[in-house]
Image 1 (cartoon, rainbow, N blue to C red):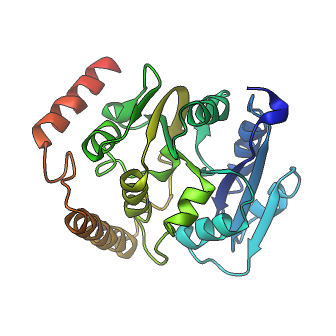
Image 2: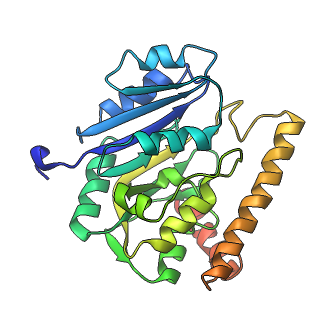
Length: 267
């Protein structure tokens, strides 16, 4: 892909009190071999220096006056994006150097609306997946099983065409955790072509005191309630569109075997 013809990718990075991670995250993005990036940092009412640190880099910084939550920050980023493609990046995670080069290349080569890259979960070995070759999937069953989106709803696994997201009015439900599960599920369902991409790897870290790891009892109760809410939305969506979700309400044995194979491959 020639640099002069590389489409713009909007990378949306929400941050709330993440001053420990902002610099490393932005250096990771700016060190990509793919250079045509619009990095949108949404400072979600941080009480620390997150926004001030981000301002030192060539990014589009949006400061929210108060903390509105991850969903609102991501929706703000979508509305501000001018790129042909959108990717969501968590401030405390990393991607490999050729991530956008390989993701954009695959999506342009195949004409897909959504690309799915590999992922490494630093805590759970069975949640490591790397694709060996570019493959395109169109059937609902194949799209759902190759991504296992019903179990792994992480939105940062995907690169989306911006016009595809807007066509289907995809946005994040605000005021909830586990907000990306139904977003990712709907995107995988609606796309006519989903391409999986080798050589694109997102590393997820469970950092101390993050949204999902806070020890506060009330917080953890809300996370649990929002997980139940997200699961219901997902199952209702599947019922409305008349499909089963691999690993959730069909193919559970196949999913368990797939996890075991992943675990053995990455031991």
